[in-house]
Image (cartoon, rainbow over all chains, first blue to last red):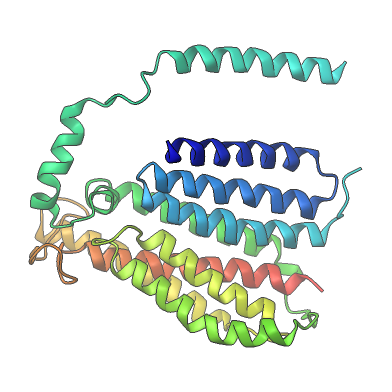
Length: 81
Length: 228
């Protein structure tokens, strides 16, 4: 019962973050929203008993990819037209 | 018009995905149960590794892992080639706040220790060479963000990366010489659940961890050098 509620809340956050990623015109905000997707996905992987994948997703998706995207945005334009 | 077309395309793709997903019985044992059972029962006996995921990644599918490492190497090399002409002109970066600087100084050794733990214990606990290497790279990233003039020597990164890659291939070739095939295990298995067990798996994962860590640190280094 508690598990179901947790899963539903996580899924809602995931969907909202995915919509926000597409919606934001500020690319830095969009990158942060997409890193929230990775975070929730890694929690999901852990709950689905795949701790290996969860660790990789957390380290790569939340940590490294976000920073590389932010550096790329800093080199180009911050706002989408 | 373009929006309508994209919505139409999404609807078509979504419909077919839905139909395909309906054929999948979720929550049931979909795999051929024999395959999973074979790995779970014979995995520890045949590879000595308690973590079956690692046993599959490094032992059963070791050659695929060599390919993955090569792909990562090529990606890092491509990035270095693209950003090459921007290098050398070192822009001073904006300094971080003292909180970040002191926090980074305290956290950096702990993060590197965690990364090393994750790849040395790849055959015992979840994780392995790839997550461990990425964790080490995020430690270096923290230092790059906190300090203005922090810099890792390119020579050290290149040497670590080359030696680690070479170790992987040499272990594979030793398997060819002393065992039956490329990447075959040629060391004793030891007692399962101890650090010195599972034959060549820890050695390969340490090599992969160092290689991934130095490659991704190189990527971060290349990108940080180009920003102001």
